[in-house]
Length: 273
Image 1 (cartoon, rainbow, N blue to C red):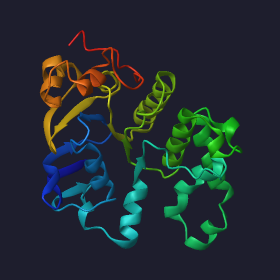
Image 2: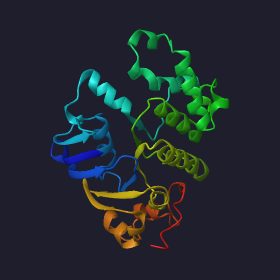
Image 3: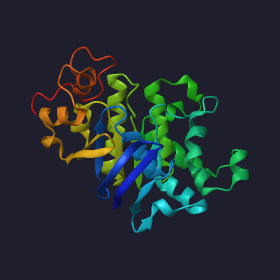
């Protein structure tokens, strides 16, 4: 169980996360939706401890995450893998070398600097790539891959961390519909088959409804909706986004015509809502 209590993050006079309290049971796949600037990315960064909370606490399996430091914090970041919109691969390294970076938290610095990984770790990396249909590209440079392929490599890197929690920050925002679907399918597969908890920020409401067990809607740093996909009606979406259907960001979220970036997987519409 991941338990977040009265979590705040302030930047001077601005509040990015404002009193968030939520419990996430182990094995759930949760989609987080909301406007740009609603606090979605900051919330994930707080959970991973890439930034520190101004107030409040995060507890996972009895461990006070907000109090961790040093080796204990590195261990938490290994168990709580982060996947970013821009992939964060090392372009000049091979695909398999990028995946092996996910093992750094389990190793001392010197062997890692010289790329000394055990045969067992290399086999683990190849298995992760096989699961994501990327093993044939193992020896290619990361920058030779398409965006969708790079994001699947990033997911493989997360898998070799042996996480119990995966945080995905807008993982399909820059992908075409085909690659977006492959990435979301991969996240749902590891959630279902491995029982790994997945929290993912998503731009398209339809994608969240198609793939997630539970949806959190954020506005002004607060959670304003928490429920199953079927409870996310058009009216509730417009309440989360704070505007009507003529607003461009709402139109993008709903997958309506006139959106400025490619429609992601499952984002067709909410006609049934």
